[in-house]
View 1 (cartoon, rainbow over the protein chains, first blue to last red):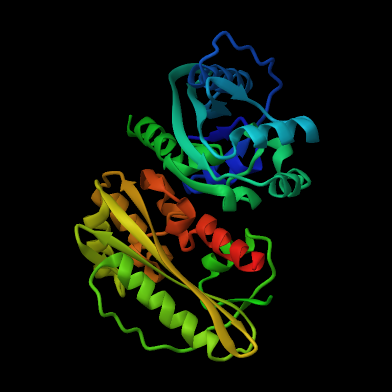
View 2 (cartoon, each protein chain N blue to C red):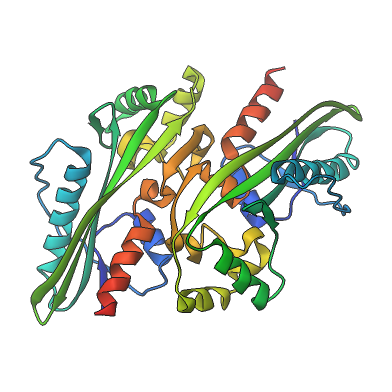
Amino acid sequence: MKIILASQSPRRRELLELLGLPFEVKVSDTEEIMTSTDPGEVTKELSCQKAEAAAETIEEGVVIGADTVVSLEGKILGKPENREEARKMIHEIQGKSHNVYTGVTVIEKRAGKECSRNIFSEKTTVKVASMSEEEIEAYISLPEPYDKAGGYGIQGSFAKYVEGMEGDYFNVVGLPVHRLYDVIKHLSDK
Amino acid sequence: MKIILASQSPRRRELLELLGLPFEVKVSDTEEIMTSTDPGEVTKELSCQKAEAAAETIEEGVVIGADTVVSLEGKILGKPENREEARKMIHEIQGKSHNVYTGVTVIEKRAGKECSRNIFSEKTTVKVASMSEEEIEAYISLPEPYDKAGGYGIQGSFAKYVEGMEGDYFNVVGLPVHRLYDVIKHLSDK
């Protein structure tokens, strides 16, 4: 069964490679529509819209859509659009814990028909160390924060500010590798 | 101040690069002597022996030694030497949680004299999913398990079997990046 990743994130591509299964990347334009304010539900909705858009273009295969958000004290943090927003986000997350949610939708199609759909969201709690003004300024002057939810990349220069976590590390990078593997394994069992 | 990593592990090299500080790798032969059976103490002792051996060869600089072990139900798991040992280790760790300890020693030398020494050990708890015989056989047929404590590489093909963790992810890969950064930062404050 052909696997299609409906995401252009190079990090998700690397994580999916860990499963050792061949796949293609196919991204279709979608309008992002959120009807919930709950971070887990939001990531499920957005992952579903991405997967559906890619699934429409194929006859056969397994499509994976994913969406990651950072949630701090009930507020969703997206990607910072400029230096000022990045500064504000890092200020907010430093010195405390926040939650990272990745929602995943796996749609299986055979002979043009959808035959299964799995949607889930995985939460990981990340504890960030206290940072000085100099450390924040040095970090936001890198290109790293600007294409990432919450304004940081755990697998890059931000690693030194991460005291610890509870949950799946790979979920923070962009895909809950273990749960996704489990879903895909059971599809092929059928 | 020159930084020296007293470890030949390519994974530790990559992790130290995350700190963004230039460093060299210098490995000196040491006899590994353990006087404790406590996994945290063992990693501190071994990291110290590695750091001391490299520190003896320099006049100036900061030397980092590190050692990682996997501890399961009070027993220390080293690197599997053959397929049979790898099979046994993966059988033992699957379906439950274990602890990974990385001990770190940082020795600072100026004008031929040691002027500071920091030794610590960091623990991360890793929860491994239940694995089938087929999954275990497929995993131990890869080269991945054989140069790693506990017989697995969390950042490689084993990622899909890791349900979650509590603590510093990078500590499992081989260096507690945040705590090491904290120690080095305070050295340069002086």
